[in-house]
Image (cartoon, rainbow, N blue to C red; front, side, top):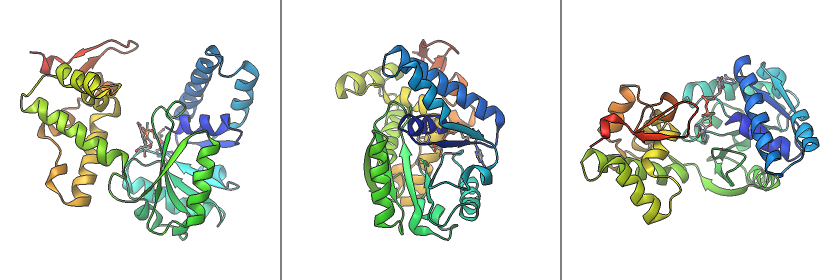
Length: 285
Ligand SMILES: NC(=O)c1ccc[n+]([C@@H]2O[C@H](COP(=O)([O-])OP(=O)(O)OC[C@H]3O[C@@H](n4cnc5c(N)ncnc54)[C@H](O)[C@@H]3O)[C@@H](O)[C@H]2O)c1
């Protein structure tokens, strides 16, 4: 997600420090940005000169303090882990100017909780970009309990300058996107688990019947089944309502390491370097 966010900011004229603790991740991110810019060039959306200008606006940095010292905005997109985010925001609070806005791209962690480890609760906000960032129009803007009107207004305006469509939501479990998406995915998994229909049948109903570009089981594979489980647990714990309880089949698949496209096995089987997929042997009739 970090490479996509850096890409979009740089394409819209902002100078970006792209920060990661891993040099390897930084090299991989630049390679991905290059490849995605090449695709834009081949579609004649940008030319080679513009591609070079966009790349020139991105500097990779492996030290957090150096990377954020002179910045007006930080968009955190590190691994989805509460303790890690709390540590990073504690550090950001120390390393940034008092006026710097601190945003998180978290899919499910409370913005209010993240803000609680800083000395400026009013300047912490969620900027939930969708994957793939250069393509998807939506940014879910999440107001923490104490996020100020001024900061919200600034981030809404900034998101429009990235040619995105920002939608303002309040900070409750799952925000809006995942509060609606994850129960749908969970229900699709329950339908499979209870033998209502097979993998392809469930996905076909939702694609052709509801005009979804991708069926919910394939989408779950793409998001990562571990990520889906983690978000469902956030909803389940956050609301204390059994309607969000993750399907036991999802729990088992995660425990067995079948995490979807990234491991090659989920509801479907994926071949690296190919777009082909087939229903996983476990679910073949
Ligand atoms: N993948 C998605 O579809 C998606 C969509 C929307 C939002 N998100 C959110 O975006 C964030 C990142 O997701 P991702 O899928 O890109 O994760 P990822 O695990 O692929 O990448 C996270 C990166 O963070 C780096 N990192 C770890 N600790 C760090 C630290 N202390 N300082 C700096 N960098 C650090 C890792 O080296 C890694 O390169 C998460 O909060 C996730 O919930 C993901």
